[in-house]
Every structure is written in structure tokens, then in C-alpha cells.
Length: 370
Image (cartoon, rainbow, N blue to C red; front, top):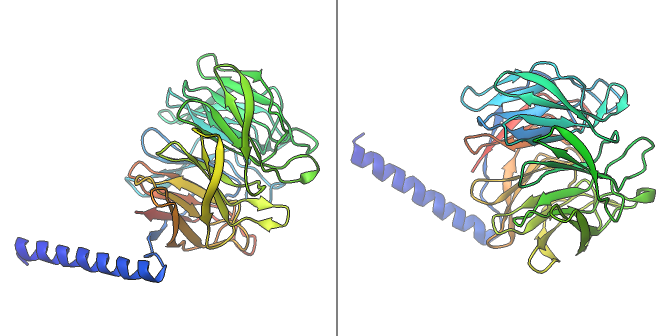
């Protein structure tokens, strides 16, 4: 085949793909996106936390091999997009299930709290990807899990709410100083919350939405934290109370809140928070209600929503912030709830672990490319 013929073939293929996409759009069904099965992690894990390392690898931290009362891992799994392989990290100081996770300006990874071998814990530690070593990062002032972790613009990290010892949701908030390697208690939330969602706004404030309050009641309220003044203020009310949802800051500065658990089951709706007006508006409805899912902002600016509960879902959906619409995004190779995921350095979404419909903990992974 000549170069001219090759170019013509590629042009014809692009034209055919565009025609097919247009035809599918007319019927209201989006063209399936690119999912491929990935390699298996070194361990089957659920209840993990995931993050992108500065070198482009994806780090899946801790988790457990069965329900949360079972063995919690002292290791992490590291996915290398160049070699398309997973490797196991060195052993950490403590085991972590549903821990907080953040990459610091130094390139080290802060891991804190969660459930461990001795129950709810406050252990914090730093992982150095360059040396594959762990060192101490002090301790939270209160042992906690089910909190949300948000990194501030200066590199400090907030551990917000969660559960401490008796299952009661907490209003307490702590701030980790990356420079001093210490934890300090800061102003508390107005409302105690476990399993809320949080997002950093472009102006440096932190939005915290929903969660579960006293009496296991799901919350529709939201709050804003200003690190400059160490104060919280109201941030309106969501149309639907929810916990175990996701919050993603979009390129336009708004925050997309998706799914979650209501008092009567999973939520199918999505909402947008506008920092300019301090108000919430509808962001449409998912094709299926879901909670315990993964939400990732893709390189295009679209948001990928994948997997989740109920019924350990295989489906995925894409939110387009330009048109405020949803489209189907294909299917994972395996249904999974409680997985975690992050973007690899090559822009590919990596979704790994979780549990199957028969409650088998998974080591498998799925890769999504736009």
C-alpha cells in the first residue's frame, strides 16, 4: 500500500467513524468508547484509594481482600503504562482500608487514616516513589475513616469529617502541613458528615457536599471552606440528598456531583455547583443509578463515570460539560463495585479492583481511552 493509499484509507475510516457517530447520536445512543481489559494487580483488593504519581504511574493503595473486617493490605499496587504491568510496593507502616490519599509538592504520597488491623486508625505516612520507601507523617489528631481528603493550592491537605470510633459522623477537620510534616485541627464543619465528597475550587476554597449525618440520614447540604480565613460558610443545597457520591472540578471551574446513596437506594441524578453564584443546577440524569463508582476527568475535559453499585455495574458514562449532556461509554470487562481509579500519564483511565456480584474481591483492571 502506498503512502497516498494509506492516507486515503485513514481518511475513509475517519469519515466512516464520524458518520456512524452521527447516526448513533440521532438515535440518542452514544458510540461505545474504548475499553480494554488491563493486566491483573499483584493482589485482589477492594476499598482502595488511587492516585496518579508524578512519573505517570497509577498507585492503588491498601484495601482489603474481603469485607472490611478482613485483612487490610500494607502494600500498594503500581501500574506502569509504559510496561503495561503492575508491581507491588514495599510494605507500609500500617494497613489502610478506605484511607485518605494525596500527592504532595515533593512528589511523595501522603496516606492517612482508614481502617487498619486494629480498627479505625490515625496513622499517616509518606511513600517515596523514587526509592519505594515509607516514612512516618505524624498521626491524625483523631483516628478516622470515611472522611474526604482534599489538597489545597499550597500543597497542604485537609482530612474532613468521617467516623472516629463509635460510628457517629464527625464535624472535625484536620490540616496536614507538607512543609512541617504535622497535623493541626482547624475549624469544624457546620454539619457532621461521614462519606461526603469534596473538591478544590479554582479560587482555593474547598467545597464539601452531602454525606451521611446523625441517625444515618443522607444530607443535601453543602459547605465551603476558606483556608485563608479558616472559616466555613453555606454552599446551598443539593436537589437530592446523597452520600458515597463523587465530586469533580471541571475545566470551567464548576463542580460536578454524581450519583451516590440516598435513604431509599442509589441516586441517578447529577448536579452542578457554580462558585460564581453559590448555587446548584441540574446536570442531567445517568442511564442508571449508581454509588461507590469512579469519576475521572479525562484529558478532553469530559468526566468518565464507571462501575459502582448496585449489582456491581459494568457500565460507564461520559459527561460533556460543554453541552451538559450524558452519553454511554461502553462496558468494563468485569462488573465491579468499590473499585478505584486514576489517569495514567498517557491519559488512559485505569480502573482496578473492587468486588464482583458474588462478593469476590478482584485483582483485575480495565483501561479506558478516549
